[in-house]
Length: 453
Image 1 (tube, rainbow, N blue to C red):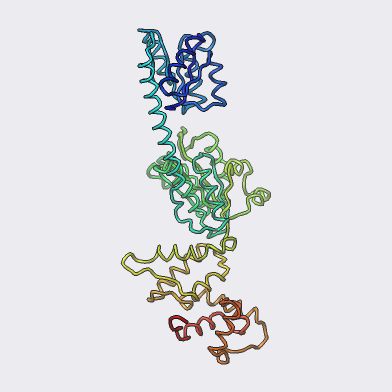
Image 2 (image 1 turned 90 degrees about the vertical axis):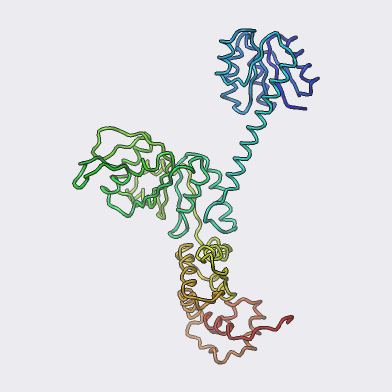
């Protein structure tokens, strides 16, 4: 079948005749005798093109086309009109009709009009499919990892990116909340427009209001020139209100008004300015506690948190640590350099560190190690902060119990314990009663295994 056609004509014989002729030309055609019957049919039967008469009792063909444009925007109507009735034909085109056929109806003309409409429908659906596929395949920039927590977060980003709904992004410091905000922007229809971010905790209320809403010349002491605010700078795009939980109460009321009215009021101006901006907000605070303490407005919270998106801390995505480390290695390596890599001991150190500063701390550690080392392979000693923390943890675990020192641990004993623990260096260090940094140094002094052993 070439396509699915629904014929609409209040004359049953005419509708059935046109249906049969279309079937003979290879179309999957069905006939109904009223506009209302057409709408009921479309609820349960996917259809490509509606071929309708204009002059019908009850719902006319023009009225039907208007309803189709509203309820079935992917479907194309073709109308049949009286010969020379061009005013009606123009009205049909304005109502969303793809083409029109004049009476007396000739099947060749019908086939041509329907075939063209089908080609257009097919092309439009393919463009839509490719656009959706492009949006879904578009890289979520900077978000590395494949843990369940990250996969769930990325899926949520993809689900809400196409909406203009406000999103509140929550999470601990260093988890990458701004990266999530940028991903929401980059996957949205606003991606070609500006992405603007402002730290609400970094400035006092009066300065923040001027930053957000702008001011006119002479609005306050020192305002020698008029200035556009960030709401206007982000026109058509996305505005991220970072650290929203620390926004002064005076500014909160004005932000709420801007979100509800889609207008802003420059300081010192007597008129409003319409804005079209999607609002994202981020915070590391417990917002419910902030509301209970009367330091954050509950009405603004509900306006911002249409969707809440939580960014998981690194401790909830341990399996992503090495993927993130590799990501930062590539990020900070110079294009002319041979790709740097992590030694087994460095990987082990990263895997077992708690990283209280989350991804930001891991990123800093990789950048620092690359700066400290000239080797192609980064070793444990290139991560002094992580080594110090590992030593402190080992000392805490060993307590006051005196154990073996590094001098009493022979290479044979070291290999024996590593084999016994299945290569688990943390457990091996615990059993040998030495710090992990000492273990890593001893491993670095072991002779390389000959090939084939």
